[in-house]
Image 1: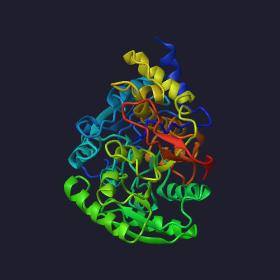
Image 2 (image 1 turned 135 degrees about the vertical axis):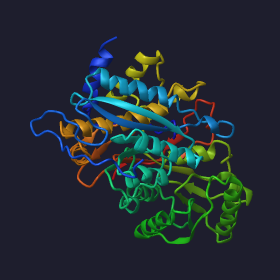
Image 3 (image 1 turned 45 degrees about the horizontal axis):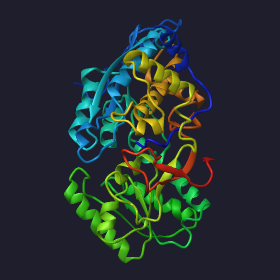
Image 4 (image 1 turned 180 degrees about the vertical axis):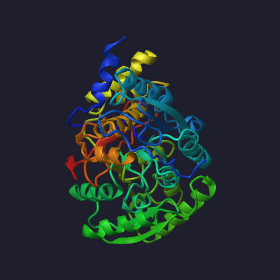
Length: 443
């Protein structure tokens, strides 16, 4: 959840029109079946689970970072208040094709698995929502939504969005980020462009028991680009068991060190500088998203590591902040709370944060949902929502510079930028966390 990988977009979309009026004025395991398929005369009906002629029930999840502050001092803002404000903004602006949104909001501790399951159950069984926005850090809970309960999902807080996992989905599943396939290709392409891989010994580590497919994907991507992998493995200890995970991570690090690896790719997790340093190993370390760097470097020094980085989505840290959609979301929140959300650098320097990071994420999720739902029309069902999503084309998401959706393409971000963690960065300072390296490119 990087504070400095800001994103921009190409064009304003329908969420702007539904915000305009508001900002201008001061126990089933699957959804209940529906026999009503929607009106054919353009009038709204109760066309699907969670949808009536007048309302659409949605769930909105967010990572609750409060319990982690004792060891991870990240502040993305008051997610729950921001979510409520922007949903209210849509409703005050007329809703979606005449329907108002009814939102249920639930936070989850990113390292406490039962909380994610409780949120999924609350959304899909207790409230029987039409869609869940935000998603969860891991796919166990994402699949609870989109597989077990066959409910629409828009995710982005974690990684592992790829063809393998999507085969298990039983409902439309979109992300404001990019797929693992494109992220891995972009990472290798970006590193090759600045000659960070040729002549080096490469190791690949998967950081979750289920990350073996990602490791294989990374190995194949490197092979296709002309690189060989010295060694690869998976840490099969759950990260929630911190002592056991770190012990295994150090064993893996020693193994890679003994084989002379000087480049490490981490998939399915974040960088762990303290574990590498503990065995005297200091490779260049790369992950596939800038959001997966911050947590790892927040408490451990990386001064001895040549390069720690990932691909982001823009050279301009303020692009997403200045997008039309983000302006509308910020205005809705200011109207509700009186709080002005600062830009990325300004927000990093205040305590508590005004909410730049969190708003960028939740505004993007709501934007995707609103645009697809508007295009679906009066007969709003998972099938028509999916068709609406596929018809979006280019979209100006606050979180990604150049994004698009289309048939078979449900991951938004289309541009990539290699970014290096700035060793001078601190959680309480004003120096941006990442420095762009090389050129921004589209993939």
